[in-house]
Image (cartoon, rainbow, N blue to C red):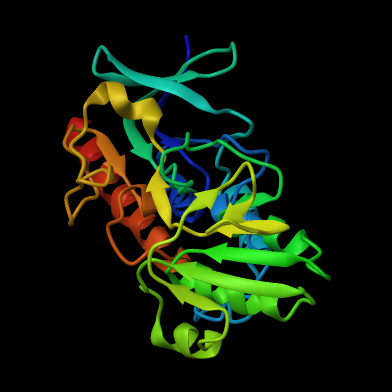
Length: 296
């Protein structure tokens, strides 16, 4: 007979790993399902030092991802990597998680959605549409790029846009321009960016031609923020807010369907960062523990 887990956790970032580790150490049986080849979520592609993480000052995102893997292994959490989820359905009061690739579905008494967010693409295009010379979202690809002698346009008005504008400007680019329709970045980043090369107001982008306001660029970097990625759970008809984030109960992280929990950035419950994501995982784990004890 196929094992039924106390909880199937979809997403192996800080929130998902935290939840799985706590469940395992509380004596329950979690299964952690991750689409990528390694745990860590967005931290695994973040090469910069995270000086906001009080317990690990200076640790890079990739170091944090390695620590998450080590924690899961130490707690004996079973992990299924390279396992994107196609859909989730309810069958005999269990949550059945169906994989994209041919394989066996897995079952759990609870479902934890910890699948995070995806960088928002240019408006009017498919979320995963890409073009040569156009990089969407922050991460290791930005750091791996050689900017020497190139003309670069940075699009966006948030922290990532202003931070990466400053970063690219110091990497030997021939020219760097920041286009921001509205400025949402923290004042420290706005001050560091200064006014030179910063364009505020409306602008037009042609990603195929690689132009902004008809000006050609060698590279266009897009930082339009994030959107939740949990399409696999659409069939559950969970309550969501106006931006698509899953609504949850503050005290338990439970979504609008009993036995379903949403944690980390896919729920946008708190200011998004590693610490709050991990705290979300603890909240959901304790709620699942209480629920399983009541069912016993």
